[in-house]
Image 1 (tube, helix red, strand yellow):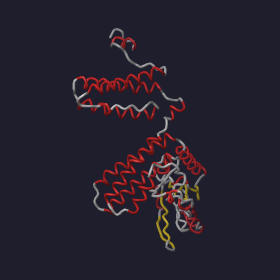
Image 2 (cartoon, helix red, strand yellow; image 1 turned 180 degrees about the vertical axis):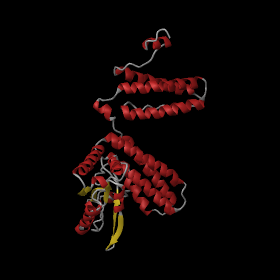
Image 3 (cartoon, one colour; image 1 turned 60 degrees about the vertical axis):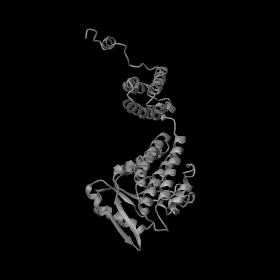
Image 4 (cartoon, one colour; image 1 turned 120 degrees about the horizontal axis):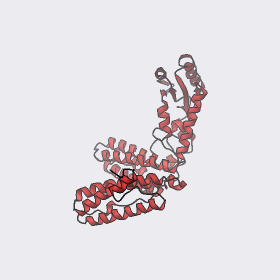
Length: 358
């Protein structure tokens, strides 16, 4: 660490920004060839708009230094894996305005560790990264310039690397192309490595390494597609049981409420199937399929397959499958001792509400 540079910025804060800067942070794992980048300082957390004026980028003896502002919101987003993680996980506080500022920072970092240890949380974040990779892949497919293809492929690999790291209970802030890079034990290299990423998709590194050497745009696109496919397969096998289901804390009344809301969709599917309305039947079946995927994640029930039964010429198959799924869901609710809020007649409903004479 360049103690002179650290001392300079701390003294500058004390003399010029004592009421404007909450924390000054250094980062480990961000250096190359002993340049101490990020270790003499990396960023500061302002507590007033004036504090942001401390920002400065400069070069000394050929080494660039970037003293920049990162507000509390961005720190919180690092804890929820929505911003760069290294800046929180590998942080050291160099200066604190108050003990409360310091405690706030450590509390947020504890939240990060808790989130990384929660397989349901990390799985959801991994799925989010996969979705981003798929969106970027759509743009990649239409790209023609090779340097742009290379750039887009690396961006996609970065999302996939993050997804794989998350389900391993750790983090990665850059694309990883090989085992050698991933498991580099040098603490200076943490921004480029991920030593705890022990479980990876089949052929993940093999496909990624080829991205480094290929000079063919179509091959880059094909390799990127394979990387997305193998990572999706990997996530399918890593899918955790709902945390609520594991702990027995599922709110089955809430689940029943979901079913009562969705019962209208089931009725519509039956109607559309009975009347040969293939377009409307598909639309509502598709909406219901999305809900069925969601409840499997949040309530730990099976992930029901509805759409495979859709055949525009044999809508009775869809109707039958929808009815079977509904029956199973009703059984789950009743088996957990929850009453479905339903009535055979309007009179029964109004009587239950105390409106017998309506």
